[in-house]
Length: 479
Image (cartoon, rainbow, N blue to C red; front, side, top):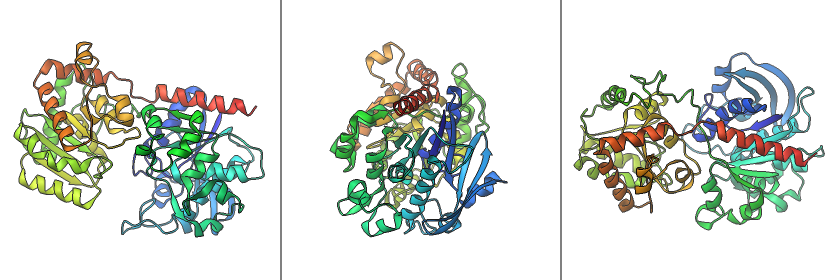
């Protein structure tokens, strides 16, 4: 089976969040199920620099007003199709934001061009390769099934995956004319309270919809989590599938991770201590026997990071330590930096992102705090499970699906892998921390939780099988 994946980012070439991890790892996992994936990705400068020599496939002429060429390259086992449109993608900022941190004003056109190219590939642009199904990811690729619907070409099935419904690709209606869609497409699929929504349009036109955990699939049907699109999603409920993400168990492997000081397995947890010491040194904090908590996150309201400054004193008073890696809202960053200045030997904060350091934090910390108000799937808790870094998580979305709360029954059966809490308030987080400290003081129980987490299947194996089955069901319907 041949699949065209359309995405705006892909690890390890370009990453702003978990979307890149999925689009980079899922194609590799699908190979075991006889599924061949080619991923259409913008040819950002960083991508072209990393992949080296490419092969020119098609001169596309102008795509939505900009000269473009379709390139091909294989990179680290991934088959890539690169949309080389310098007018859209040859920029010094990030994929979506300029150097000042502001959205590019033509993001609507940049990612419409990506989607339109995906639809042309689906329609037979390449003489020697045509996909059996198109898999579009998030709002940046959500117009792909829209262009496919309105194209005069044989129809093939499409799947749209929602990685985070909070990001919807909403743009002024005045730009509609630049999309090169028929006039009736605006009211039929794109119009959203006087604007246009790429995500809404994709939800209405894709043959099926998936999201990145079963719980999140249920949550986005409600006003609390649907972000204004719950009605649209509800109208497609029979076509909605929740498939939890996995992680690349080769990259995230504590036994052979080059980014950590000491490799270990669930049978050699004592070796984690060397990583604990290295982590304390990296953040210039005390190295002692108190529990070491970590946070690896965007520092935003969605992630519950506004609650963290209010519990720092509690963590320190109970004998714990805290290390934070991330960036986000200015006020949260400032509050955490201030907390680190108050507790210089117990709290370390690094604003920004550092991939090797994030591995060491998982390998050296005792617990990872993830108090998200909503979390479609989440990956950091999966890394935590894999590394024996016990997740302390809000009971929502994929966090609920992947972490087994340390209640009495789970502890008695040695199935517990973390601590869940709700509601996402300061007091809710305080209670979770009190539970965590109690559990940590019981060496046997804590060790059992670490081992249970490390034995959890957090790889792409089962999830890739579910995607392969979904692809087969969609392609068989068209036969």
